[in-house]
Image 1 (spheres, rainbow, N blue to C red):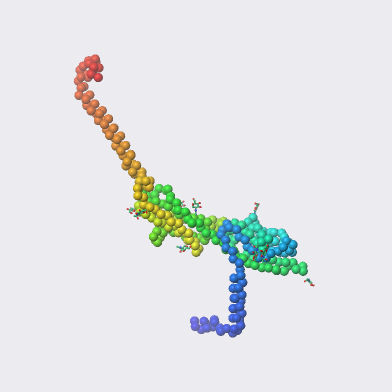
Image 2: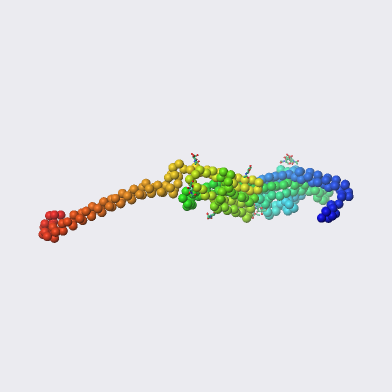
Length: 299
Ligand SMILES: *[C@@H]1O[C@H](CO)[C@@H](O)[C@H](O)[C@H]1NC(C)=O
Ligand SMILES: *[C@@H]1O[C@H](CO)[C@@H](O)[C@H](O)[C@H]1NC(C)=O
Ligand SMILES: *[C@@H]1O[C@H](CO)[C@@H](O)[C@H](O)[C@H]1NC(C)=O
Ligand SMILES: *[C@@H]1O[C@H](CO)[C@@H](O)[C@H](O)[C@H]1NC(C)=O
Ligand SMILES: *[C@@H]1O[C@H](CO)[C@@H](O)[C@H](O)[C@H]1NC(C)=O
Ligand SMILES: *[C@@H]1O[C@H](CO)[C@@H](O)[C@H](O)[C@H]1NC(C)=O
Ligand SMILES: *[C@@H]1O[C@H](CO)[C@@H](O)[C@H](O)[C@H]1NC(C)=O
Ligand SMILES: *[C@@H]1O[C@H](CO)[C@@H](O)[C@H](O)[C@H]1NC(C)=O
Ligand SMILES: *[C@@H]1O[C@H](CO)[C@@H](O)[C@H](O)[C@H]1NC(C)=O
Ligand SMILES: *[C@@H]1O[C@H](CO)[C@@H](O)[C@H](O)[C@H]1NC(C)=O
């Protein structure tokens, strides 16, 4: 082990080489720090400046190329603008504004380094006149989530709420918290739109309505996060706030008394009929013994 290590790291034979490497590194740092940076959000518009002005007269003697990671985006040759298919209908040149490249409705895949090259005709041949690189970074922030109450039937004394947000990148992680403790969720879904690469996320939570709550829904993505808090105040008069309960009280206060009254009325009628029947039963002899006239008189 020790021997091989020694062999792999020979002493620097030429100290000037190290100095040269150092200078190259300094040069690279200088170039990269000169790289222009533009940061935009998805769906916004970006204007990437070539930082080079040209007069209309000069335009016919120039070739201007805008490329991204060595792929063509736009060219202006002898005043004729060509836009490559991926950028058609959402890219325009702004020749008067330093030969800018304007991309409308940015999309996540637009991030990258764009290079502008200006060539001028000089004694019959084109010579490079100007070169600049612009780094475009794209953000896709999730909006602050919404928390909604679900009307789905749930167990007695339990409510279900749903937290959701959409249109962000990268892949999010969603969680629920109360008093610094993570809670168990019922139904968490994360989906990605294959076209825009943006994510949609939602999560459901059940809680006991019999106590106060302050529930935090946290969505983390990349180095960022968004959150929303849902507060629940234990209702002071349960019948007004809980549907299940109010039905119970409705039953207690209206249905049962009404049923009681109906039953009492019914029983009273039955009792009267029964007592009438008993009165009739006591005089069967008068009905059969007497003549028809006598019977009529008694009725
Ligand atoms: C053109 O670029 C220069 C230098 O990069 C800048 O100072 C100037 O404001 C730009 N012009 C316009 C019209 O944006
Ligand atoms: C280009 O022209 C604009 C005015 O039209 C000027 O403000 C800007 O400084 C010029 N940019 C360069 C790089 O010369
Ligand atoms: C997003 O960018 C890709 C490649 O850059 C392009 O093909 C696609 O059409 C763009 N989508 C939208 C909605 O602009
Ligand atoms: C650009 O728009 C035109 C007309 O709206 C349409 O015909 C064409 O297909 C579009 N091109 C691209 C690349 O979307
Ligand atoms: C143009 O190029 C020719 C040779 O290719 C040379 O003789 C001539 O001097 C050049 N003219 C200028 C103005 O550079
Ligand atoms: C939240 O709800 C409001 C109103 O219903 C809506 O405008 C907004 O887009 C929603 N936000 C999210 C992140 O869904
Ligand atoms: C989970 O959520 C999805 C979509 O929001 C819904 O279709 C599904 O029924 C839910 N499942 C449960 C067990 O609630
Ligand atoms: C709700 O909490 C109360 C006490 O705070 C408890 O008696 C009851 O069982 C709980 N209900 C559910 C469904 O967890
Ligand atoms: C719940 O919140 C209400 C209103 O803020 C408060 O009056 C009550 O004391 C709280 N109950 C408990 C158990 O914390
Ligand atoms: C959420 O982001 C903020 C800054 O925007 C940060 O201060 C906080 O610590 C983050 N929270 C979590 C839980 O990551």
